[in-house]
Image (cartoon, rainbow, N blue to C red; front, top):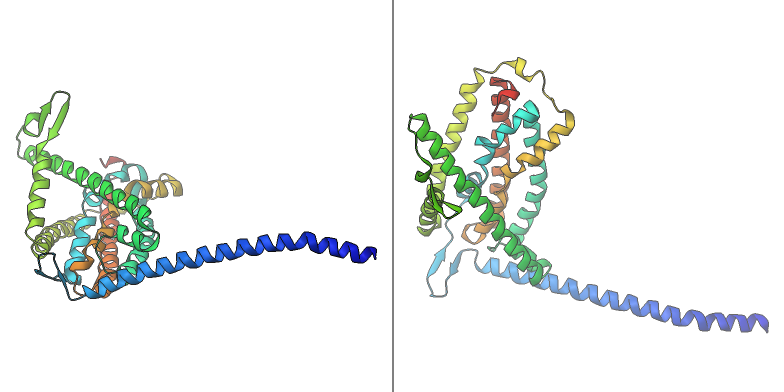
Length: 323
């Protein structure tokens, strides 16, 4: 009798607990299933939109907007976004890192490659414009996509500002090489305690005019400018290779392995821009095929150029003499 009573008392204690646990598991499964269905639904909608626009897009006015970009155009767009600051400016980090800066560029491209895998997967599954904003909207919802969109806009504004200011520095160096002493008011317009770099504003305005000419025309102009940049880089590599002294590479790791990773964090900015290729998804003839080719192709080519330039420059002069 005592055993029976104890057993009944235990059952009455355990049953409510099992009931609560079962209810919690049921609610959790429902929430998980609902979230999964919503995510799959958004992905399905995004994929259907991409399929409908596979051959052509129609604007609100009824004008047919044909897809005009191929893998070659995308590749040069990616190279145009990546190559720039890393080649002409960030190689100066070698005065601290030494010849090991070439390894810093190599480690950076590995990290970027992991991110590129995500971009290529999304770009092939969801061939719509918007880049990370569209991908976030299709997977985690509108609020995160809202934050992601403004983060992208802010990053583009910051990078565009830095590059535009760099044009002013390049122009000043070019004029000084001809022996011209240009006063500061030629570059800056003072407003009380603030200065406006109207050379940078002019550069941004000219690029905007290229963009307004249409995607195909702007891609053509970008191809020409990028080709000139790559030819200049190859000239530096080939001409500098005849001046390389292997003695300058004897102290390859002046800061040790720690210096390699510190250099990688300093020059990571050099690879920013490959993600912008995903913004052209609706302009590409075959996005599922061409976008992965362009993203990985631009990363591999730019990384090869960065490593070769870093080795060439540090081989020409001692790393501590590089400014």
